[in-house]
Length: 370
Image (cartoon, rainbow, N blue to C red; front, top):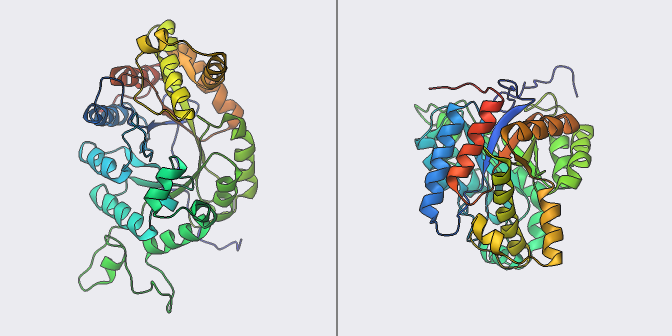
């Protein structure tokens, strides 16, 4: 890298740990729908969670894209983020992530340009290369059954999206006269004034592909530790080894998603995560549904294979009292060296999820802000 290259310090990306937390803390919201609840209930919980996170010192609130899953109401992250922007004023909002192969890059540039206009300087664009659903649903989303092409073309799609966001296709390019609006083109129009902000791009991953790509491009990286724990350390090592300073970041910045649930009583945490694990059993066996209640999970007759899955799955969920969760998060931060921990609390009840984030904020003495 030339020594005079203009390298950013990661403004809008880097976050500082607050209180006594070992790293910056953030929220990953799956907008889960519990048995006996509606999508409206889930979305109201998301608003309450964003408000709580903002008032308790969490740095960002991301929404994940999933499709054809009755228990996850986050099929349209941009729509949800616009709603959350209307109910918050400081916390960063973003996608964790938008599954880029499901969409035309221009559409994503327009959506997130609109979000940036709604919440200037607060929007993150996290991108994944997986479909966020099963193959048949992915084919319906993409209008093609050639799904491998979407993942294989991810670097090219990413480059195209970046060009649209920056409005800098070279002369002669077929898209040179196409502009994502809202966007930089408005500043070049007569009398135009454009926001100085542009949503920073993050790459998301659960293996090495996006880790290496994020490193080579000098982008921030978010790893899905919450469902791919065995790959966490290799992926983070690969990201850091591959990293090249860029105009976006002078040094690597890695965030990891973490399943964490704190309750006032340890036994309650075990009941809640068992129900969430039953939901995953059903999903992994092609029977996705609403998140069951702890009572449903207690009454369920688990097969030996299901019991093994639940044991394995819950071994990666940090749960218990606030003190127990704090110890688990402290250990994870130390082992991974992650710059930021993005917590997802999977439970049937919205109230249980909200209480978990409050307990974690309290145990780390995160600031209470008006």
